[in-house]
Picture 1: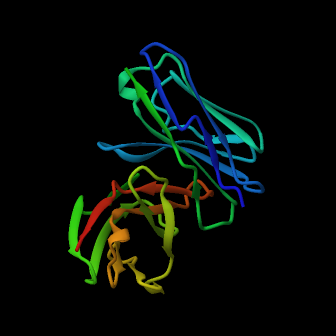
Picture 2: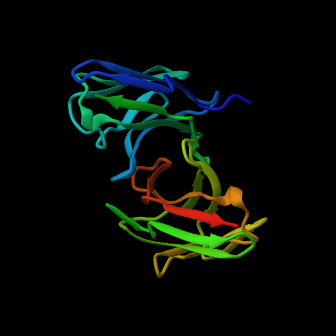
Picture 3: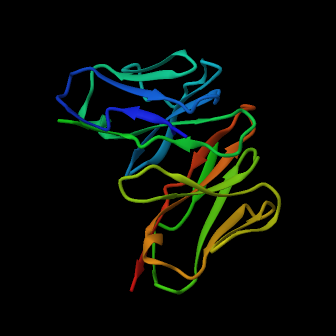
Length: 113
Length: 112
């Protein structure tokens, strides 16, 4: 079975540039999550969607961050403009509403220089 | 909000037993999870407790005491491949959905 698929796996960009991270959840899952992981703060929930609708975006750091889920099989996380402090691993995860297990993608390693 | 504490790092020897503790203070509770994360990889699900007691799954066991806000992950017969970060996570029922809040993880180093 295909797991959660993220792209790109690695991205290095210059400060001020726009970054778009992409995610394809596991087929049939109706909840999708974006997490950010850093050494200092650990794994933090940024936003989650249920049935393509954003339910809670209180974890989104600031207006430079936005996320969309136009359909059940695709989501994007956009950072515009990017800053060095955005450097982190961004994980997408999905699950069923009633499921106990959240499945993570391999992550997108972002470096902003 | 949620506050989840676990040790930053631990070391153990191959073949030994190690216990990784997790304490939590939350406004609500609907389950505690343990995930394993190898360096450079995604977190993967290990175990889930919602009722008090011990859940055993092969070499790994997880314990929960809801009254004490406490859980531990027990790893037996340690192998080198068990060197990884172990993340404790609590599910918040307030939203009605399966969102998890994670601790910062315990880095376990298994030596020969």
